[in-house]
Length: 317
Image 1: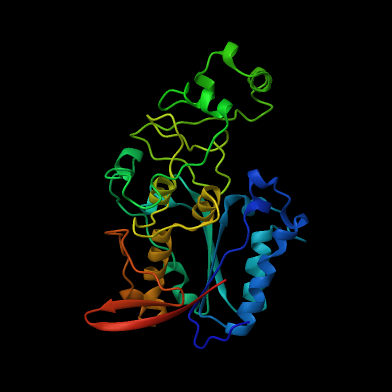
Image 2: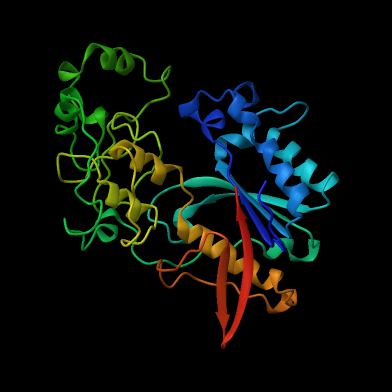
């Protein structure tokens, strides 16, 4: 393990697939579902002042050895490592992210009195519609021309979906046999929304790593194509000068879909800054995002306040 000194915040992400519907929700029966335990080794080594986890909401209902897994994780952080722990289910669109992305965020602090102030408040945000989010894009912006290739059947049915609609808007007779079977017994299949095409004035759906046009809301509102790499990066609040590289276009979609929206990381960091600087709780400031533009350094984030620069050391695993 690399050696760090004076670590303030440990941001830990473990795979969400074992807890999500897309990953069959095997929980700890999936080997990836136990990787949260690896974070404890880093906590023992680094003893950070703050620990942050983020995962899909399915983790709230996954059973652990004795209790819900999320509660067992919180219990370990409390009883073994001495943290005070809180977790919340957040819709990131309430914090300025232009997609309905619902995630669990867990925060563990060494000082209990700051725990009620660990999460940012909901903000009155700018227009988060698809149309506003994609405004100003052109082919000269990096990754904008990169599109994942689709099979002819996906293109055929995708082109038939009206703006704001889904496969449910298609006439029964044009459906492939597999879809007809589902349409005949919608309740059994939980009323799926294949080929969802959000309207321009709507907030888009969750950007995921499994960027499948049949199951994800990835269709452009008015063009017969799915969103480009740059467009989904916009939905995830990555700035346009953040360029994605990978062995394939698909790998770039996966990078973006697996990421925590940078704006959410920024807001959490700002909210915890006063705690890390040990300001009195009464003076902690609830900040609203004025812009999604920021600079990122993998290990050190710089915060400026009236000319005073504060370094916060961050370990990411």
